[in-house]
Image 1 (cartoon, helix red, strand yellow):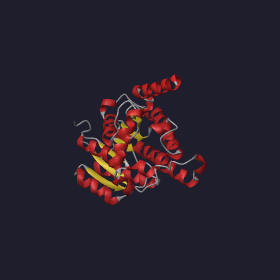
Image 2 (image 1 turned 180 degrees about the horizontal axis):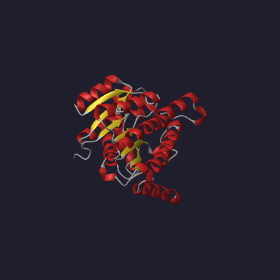
Image 3 (image 1 turned 120 degrees about the horizontal axis):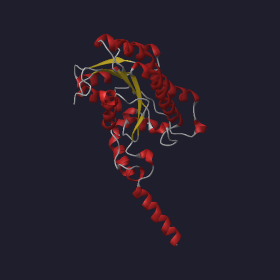
Image 4 (image 1 turned 120 degrees about the vertical axis):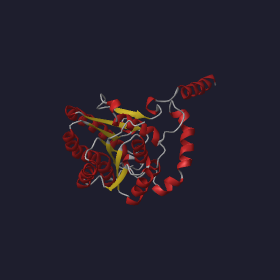
Length: 281
């Protein structure tokens, strides 16, 4: 507890999903958190839940001026900026590459890549003026390294975000600013529903069913036999935001239950036994 006492953090995409869990964890660890998102009513609801340590600024991360103003307001309110979490993200349809809509592809890059770029660009000045470094955390995905699990626009955007993280870390380390990314795996959020073509409201209504399905599938997909939660990701964000990770930069931390490792041993054993049966006739 209190790993982030005295720190000021900005979290984008903080009105739902992983962003809310990151904001909750930061407040629990003693930080003042400025939440950003496009939906004011939902942002205000999260602030009421979290109390006086939280505030909300309506922000569209695809608008550079909006992002610059968000960071300016955070510093005005609290006198400093220590942590930026670029969490705002857009899913993409799980269709064939032959079906890719160019406008939709560009829109995904605008949110997932350009939004993070604007955040880094406009956070640097505030972090440098403070003179004590700081931490920037980009919310990537294991799909940025694997050609599975997501639509092409989303996957490509997360690959770009991971590389942007490394580029920024190499440059900004001279100022004591650390830049890392987190790559979640199968985390049961509404983003999966939106990728499947349903509305966010519909996705929220079916999250329990998604979690049940994820638990069923996990045994054959990954080493840890359960779906991930926003709290799993939030714990990693607390680590990267705090002083315990002061010598960590340019890294992509997979929070995926071992999904990126490949199939677990028991799944491979089942495949082996099935193949043995085939050869045995």
